[in-house]
Amino acid sequence: MTPQTPWQKVAWHERRSYWELEEADRSGLREALSIEAAALARHADRALEDYANCPGTLDGQLVNGDMLATLLPSLRRNPTRGYEALEDPAGRAAVHLNFLGKRLRDRALAQIRGGRVIIFMGGQASGKTTSALALGPAFGAVFDAPHTDPEGVAFLLGRIHRAGCREVHLAYTDRGPEDSLKAMLARSEREGRYVPLDRMARAHAWAPHTFLGLTPRVGRSLQVYHAQMDEAGSAHITEGRDALGSVRERDKPDESAVAYRLQTAYLSLLRNPTHDPQAWYPRDVLAGLNRSLDAWRRGEADHLLRRFFKVMAERSAQAGQSPRGAPAGSEEDPGPGLGARSHLSHGES
Image (cartoon, rainbow, N blue to C red; front, side, top):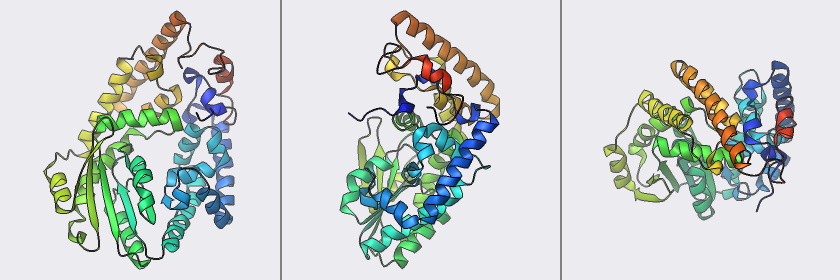
């Protein structure tokens, strides 16, 4: 079993989102991330070697920007706040990481010398990374990102072909918004990383259209697959023209419709908390997600979030448990002491 980090030991109901910190603390975290990211960019070769030595990167051949960000020490100390800070336009770390990501892409392509490439695309939490790690060893370079912007995908394909790679595969992992929301929340417990609901809606809505836009390329230069994921994560896979046909025939709601479904499912989760302590979600993640709701739904969400944690606290007291499902103060859960300090600075949890 992987040992818990100090961040994971903070009681779930005591965690605080980056957006709830005082501006001085937010500024300090942004500055730390920027300094660290700039240092990585200056020593890119060394940074990419460190990335290649990280588990889950396929020896550096998996091109994944979220994984690349874990090279930042301040992000590793508290991933939820770290990823949130990278989203803040007031910070500069993302600029340096973008540069490093391009170097990672070029390095992966250079090392395979015209070998096989696979691109995974689809909305967030649709199963791309799981599929990439399972299938990636059969390929030279593996690109793992939503890839839902048509121009961005076209540029990447051009870059791959210019590198001499003539066998390119592209897999669209397709999971419904509600199931993706559940998967994203489950991932947030393990990795501390969540996806704002507005961005999630955009990617899920655009993905099928971007995939179909590749129709003229399908053939000898590009092989495509459509992996329809069920709630358990199993996939029904079609390929080639059959893959295009299955996407063409499936319902393709627009961004506003997907956003409504995601937000409704999220509010339902807050409105009807489960009795299982192991299924409760960290407070910082929920607070961050509330910010990504449409303005007219934020008031209700904030009210539900306050009620949600009140209910959790009552159930915990009755069961002699903390909201993480372990006795407060145990080795698994240090109780509110550590969490009570967690809102004071970004490095303490």
